[in-house]
Image 1 (cartoon, rainbow, N blue to C red):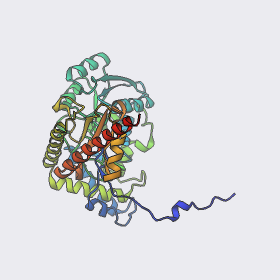
Image 2 (image 1 turned 90 degrees about the vertical axis):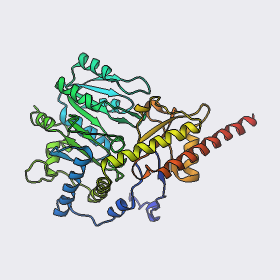
Image 3 (image 1 turned 180 degrees about the vertical axis):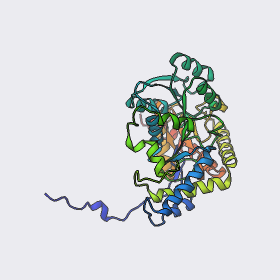
Length: 394
């Protein structure tokens, strides 16, 4: 038996142009796309290692950290979650997961696979966790590791009390992991000042880079714990001591750990360069102003935000309640079919309850906000018209 070449690969590659106003990825700038068209470099070539060093400095800036153990995991945002848990957890460790949406549950699933005893502290539906709720859970469970998403993209909730959580974790000799995949760039995050032990983010959201590399940083305190482990991390690929040697984090000769994608590095390097040139505070301010404009527009359209408290709304991923009787899928399909604009539905606990509109990176502009508001309104009206037409046939 001989398997023939597939006919589909005889056709030229076609990739449509779309405006990505969902929860991520966001559109890459021309600068980032052009960077990724450069020639491929070997993963141990000095030029590639130099770009890795430059990326590392950019990551330190966006996290506001001086941690030596700052690098990228080759993988999507989930790989940052895996690496954080894999390196800190040993068999029998008690781990507490803060739940404001889907990501705390996802982290809990991972932690169990690394041998952790997992507990949860869950916020009321549509709310952030209070300091009192978390403190009560600490008293009850005495965790060794605490995980929280600063911004949960499934619900559009932001956790504003990370600084206080850093102090709480030190009081209980607990290690704090913060997922900033959806929040970084849209809100303040000060890793060192807030005593965060591990932080990771997504390259494809507010940074405006390509997906596939996950910036991550470990505090000196976390690194000390990892070096004192009774056993090696359970997954070689996520062993931060080995990855850190490849990234030149520890002042030792670089080693081969895996073959990093040089083209993804180019894209991330340029995304970080643009981010740094604009300035962290200016980037955060732009994202917040765009979100406020969107929220005002949503109110003017007679729609309602899912997160009732303004101070708990994530600026980068905005969740809007689906009006009664409206099929969110038809709205999303209309926007994509007519305008090639992505508007997403809910995820996890918000499935069929919300629209999710992302304002990140290149898409966090006044023009894009006004555009997506107009399209959302048109798509909803079209959906309602379709319902009336169907009813008239009965």
